[in-house]
Length: 438
Image (cartoon, rainbow, N blue to C red):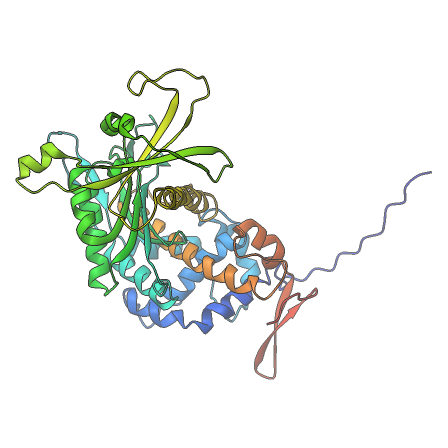
C-alpha cells in the first residue's frame, strides 16, 4: 500500500519572526535601563544618526542568541526577522563593523629585558570602564567575596598582523581576568608571539589599578596557573589581594616534595583518589637577596596521584604525579585550598563559551586593536547572557541557569511571533504556548 503524501498549503507572511523569544530578552534588558549606560560610555553620536549604541549592542547580542556566529549574519539571515521591532533598529553588518572600528585604541609595543623580538599588546580604556560599570549595575561585585582568575588563551587566526604562537599556528593570545567564575572582568589582547609569562606583572598591575580607580574593593581570592609563578607577580599579589593561589612549575619546587611526611587521601572532582600534603617554604631566595628585601614564607600545597605506567620519578624516587600550589592563605586547610584551586579549571569553560558561543573564533577585523574591541563587546554580551539565562530560568522549568546558548535558543528564542500595531500600541502575537510568566 502506497503511503499518501499529505497536502501542504503554504501561506507566506514576511513579518513573522522565527525568533520571537528575543523580544522578551530585549524587554528584560530595557527594564535595566542600559541605554543610559551605553550613551554615557561610548562616544556621542550625531543627532542625525539612524542607529544608537543600544542598537549596535542589541544587534551583536542577537547574532549569538539567534544561532549566528559572525557579524555578517545580521545582513544575511536576521534582517527580515527584526522588521518593525520596537526594541531595536537592526543595522547592516557594515554599519556595526564601522562603529566598532571607531572604538579602537592604539596598540603598544614592548621588549623583554633580554629579548629582541617585538611584542604587541592592546587594551581599551572605554570598554574597560563600560564593562566595570555594567558589572556594578548588575550587582556582580555585591557578593560577600570577590574571586579573580587570570589566564591566557590562544585564538588561532590568520590576520594581517597576527604572529606565530608557541603551538606553531598564527593567532592572538589575549590575557583574560574573570570575576567569581561567571563574568569576564578584563581583557588585554596580545599578539601570538607573547607567551603568558611575559609582561604578566604589567598586565596584573593594570587590572588592579583599574579596579582601584573604580572604587572596587580588594579581591578576596586570586588564582592563576604556573605562568604566574614569578618573583614580581608574587610580590604584587601579596599587596593587591587578600589571598592568592598560584600553580607551580615542578622544575622549580620538586626538591621539596620528599620533605612532606604526612599525606591526606581525598576524592577530587573526577572521583579519583589523590593525596594532599603541605609544607612551608621561602621561594625566590636569589631574587630577594638581589633586590635586598626580606624573604617571606608561603604555604606549598602539594597534590599527588599514582602515574599510569608505574615508572619511578628520578627526582622524587616514587611513581607519583605531583602538582603544587603556592598560597599565602593561612586559614584554610590544605584540602580546602586544593579543592578551591581546582575550580580554576572553570576558566577553560569560560574560554570555550566565548570562542564557540560568542564569536571569539570568528574575529572580523585584520588588526589587533580593532579585534580587541570585538573581544570586549562580545564578552559584554556574554556577561549579559549570564543574567539573562538566570532570570528566565526562574520563569520557566524548561530552562536552567547553567544552559549554554544553544539550549536557550532551541527552548526559548525560537518562538514564532509577529509585531502588530493597534490603537497606537505595539502588541506581540506569539504563535504557540508561552510556558513562562511575562
